Length: 370
Image (tube, rainbow, N blue to C red):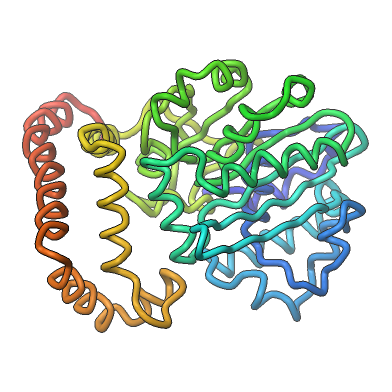
């Protein structure tokens, strides 16, 4: 099946001839995951540099470090650098921040498509444990540091880039896009043409009901793969499009698996039944826990999985035979009260799964996809 790489290879008209599409947003959202070396100084300025200049083989190892599908990343970058649609787009304003004390992982870059239209891309969760911890913190904290940084970045990008604005990101980047737009002043909001959240998690109920969120909601376009987990976490109020994926289950979060046809996403009528049931269970479980209990659970979880000398999830997985038993050992060494709380919380999740299992079977029997 075709995906965003084949889109970049085949759609050659520039953005004035062929208007901006949702697949373009996913492409730029993915480029925001790339780690650009310090020597690319122009990229960190608002003067910027064209996409074609990213094609430097000596930087590939650093640029694609810990990204899903590094070969797909390389293929995508070659397609962008060769394409008359993408090669002259200028990247500028690149920032990358990682702060373990603040539990903050943030990165963003702006794409100047042509005079009068720019796309602000926020990076999603990277492989760092800090990034994953900040994601989990969203269950009880708003704003998290990355959300505050996104609002500040959008303000600066709007000052530096006149004209219309598009905003987007994949995973946490989608959440940051919506949050930054909601928090921007009305003059900036008036310039925002579209906000793209590609499988981005939602928000706590109080945020969704706020006037700030309601003002930008009509401009939000949310896309989810058919078995979405990340994009359905927390409360969700945005309408969404369901995209067909060539992968399965959680691996559908990988945007290289999202199907493209006729210059756009291949869409479906609904999420799969199994995904919808699973997401309902997880969100109901989260609602059953108070904010304090969510924070306590997340802190305990990361106390268990963090290990000396390990900074990324890939490092944890690379030596899983050692790290998983070590995590269970740490769990056994938590104080009795915390350990009891963790098992009680997990017990609630298991009970919800058992309670809803018969309905999942009935729904599947009526012909729904799982």
